[in-house]
Image (tube, rainbow, N blue to C red):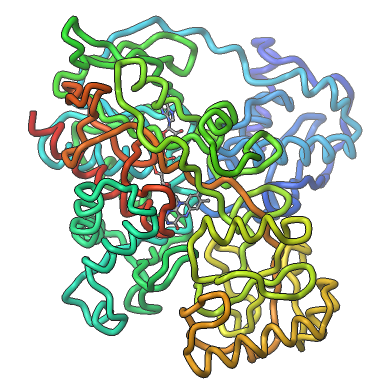
Length: 590
Ligand code: FAD
């Protein structure tokens, strides 16, 4: 209260802020608006005619990803005494929902909401242009960029990581966290008859042998060392608790699951390292625009746009690592290169972060980089029908669930390749399917899915459905009960026999026979871009004549040539870890 009085006194004295246009009634008022996943409820407290406090009371936003918005936007509303505050890039839907809910609450308090929308973040004075020198510059604070930056710093290099969004993480922080890596000597590998060589073979086959064998060997051979490296930095995985699992399209139980939700564990680990060490920092809201080269084509640094629109010239004496992610959210690139799906315009949604716009592809191509496999764009059959995101997905692992169409019939090998599953889904009524599971993963009914959402909350929100019996479930999702029951019974027979079914499925664990039963709706969504900048096994970028571009390294989804025509589920997090580290190691060694 003291703070508020002081704040208001300052406002009046300095005349910094406009007073709210209409008098507001004192009290606590609530408003609700749709967030990413469900309604988000905001409470606004009005005292002495001013906005004294704004609090998000309820939300279902993904943990770790929208945390800053949930705190910073309410604070900004109070500080500005208005609703015209900026939403944070990277979490724009959450920000918009907070503002919308706060507007409804303020309307209930009698405020002139339209007037409040005109009062917002004060104009920021543009900072002067500047030149910043470092040894290593990394573009993109996603998983590949942070792995590269941390690795380079561990080897003694001074590193700056620039990130165009207001928060770190990119696609990596949204990911399910499934990370394929085989430790040949482990009991689990023996139990599942897995090996580094089998991981190699499946990766090559899964991508129709269009991946570069040397890059794929590098990927699978260094995967488990990457897991150990993360563990040495304090990251923990669920391996001892739940064992390795098969992620959709992963083809084999070799995925490690981080203990923290979605991809947040990676950034918790990297941030702790960065906070605890000298010579490495992340600059947010800083967008790389183009490379600076000398007359020989050697990369000297990067021109970037800073937070206030100022130009920052980064000079990197050792080199630059490009880790700006894929182009799943760039409709122009998607439609230009796609030669498979024929439907990748803006009408199809994507699982990707707003930052996945392929900036690095344009930047690298402008300095002669070769592009490889750009036509290979991965769709998943697992999009939320409203948002295209993976949130709300009820499945835990491949073995314990089936897909049925609107007629209640199975239509594909649910343990197969992602492209084949998605093609099969497009052929079903309304390109729509239901994931069907029993209670094995949800024994108490309040357990979390892979995206940190409780199943009972998804049901309450109408994003998942539950039935005590299969017949009840069929009624809840409006599919013919006799077909659903027959589909599940036939599946259970194959679980018992372990034999390949008519769709070619071989991955089973337990039958679907433990009620209550669950269903979740899913549609096709753009997920991953396998093509990008050509690299060699040292993560050096290769130009269109086959030569190394001096001083330029690349890692992660911005690169191509590893996953071929179809990426195995769980292999992208391996890719960004392995090649991020290799890029960091080689750039630091210069
Ligand atoms: P990103 O993590 O996307 O990071 C790139 C960063 O660069 C972004 O922060 C972006 O804002 C920034 N950037 C872009 N342009 C610029 C610029 N001009 N200047 C500065 N910064 C820039 N794979 C798996 O293996 N297992 C999974 O469980 C899994 N689940 C997934 C779930 C979802 C919802 C999604 C979207 C993907 C999933 N994937 C998964 C794929 C995997 O997460 C990504 O391929 C991988 O994280 C990409 O990492 P990256 O570092 O290359 O890119």
